[in-house]
Length: 95
Image 1 (cartoon, helix red, strand yellow):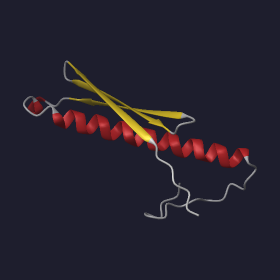
Image 2 (cartoon, helix red, strand yellow):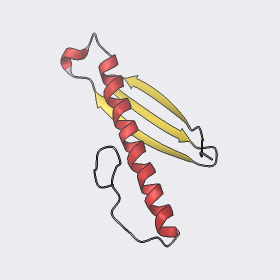
Image 3 (cartoon, rainbow, N blue to C red):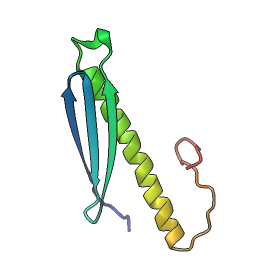
Image 4 (cartoon, rainbow, N blue to C red):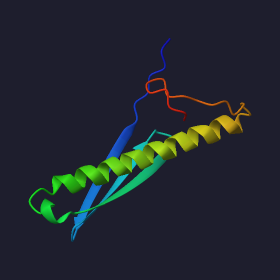
């Protein structure tokens, strides 16, 4: 029988004087993990504020992913599992 869960990510973006800050919060129902990202507006981006949103959000989501992987590694170690190298099934990258 398949294991199915749904997790929710809330992404908040705040821009103030050319700096966009993003916070991504993953809610698993039993825990939460938070990632953060920041972007500075480039001089030519005055008319396109969405660029800062995209950079800040992407960085927050990348930070969130890194923190989630760290949590998984901690959980594996807490179970006494061997520290085998893990690889992304999609990219083959070491995790």
